[in-house]
Image (cartoon, rainbow, N blue to C red; front, side):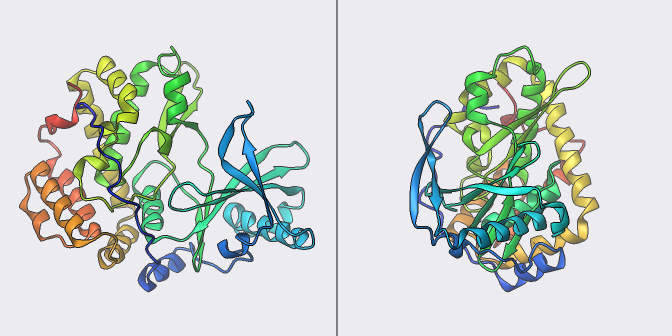
Length: 358
């Protein structure tokens, strides 16, 4: 991977885009849209805020919110029903032993989410889900992650409300601070996954993947732990006009990971891993061809970025892949389709050197 740059902050706060009628139809078709008993606006009607601290007593970006005591029983049942739809297709018969332990609110970022903590009364096991304002960019990002990555994602929309499941893992900034350099997971596995994650983000145009926007999922195996990097923030799906904004390697927050990767990978090995991920993405796209085609069709009709950003990005991608076909693209959906076509054509050709460790 090339050296990261330090000037890749979003040029300004990304606006929220409404869910279009075509996208809404897509969501209904694939059972992502349904009537729910709780909306984002209802949760905004809290009466009190208590700052939430971590286990060391330090402030977090979250506040615990308190609602009118008369409303809480009904709200708790409604939140449990939402969780049931997210996890078990609305079957409330298996939810009687769960309770809502806490509702948190975050004013940081574009989505200003609510985080709901659900606890099992029998064993104190806890889980989370999120209620956010529905933003078309984020919905496209979630669905592209579901279709083109190795990760499945559950989410539901209801009008202007978006429900997301929790993406469990070690946040990237915490992994850098406490895990990077440990003998387990094996360094080569960390470096391999960094290359593959970098490629996934680039092809499906998921931007702003700084360390705190993705997690490391570590799975113990019979000899060595397996590892996967998962995106957990999809606000910057297909909005920015800079090619490097879609390559995690270029963010200064990821410098330690990039140096680690360059230390443990030869260029030839990185080429192999990059090609492996490209091949897997094409296989996933083929398996979901009808669904992906409908999604990209709707995405092409949605104004997810200003024309000047689309034109800037298409010029950068045309130069990167050396294909003038990009210059005819007038939407972010069309650019993602061209990215898939580019890697399909490039199978069997040398990897572009600038994506590899120096």
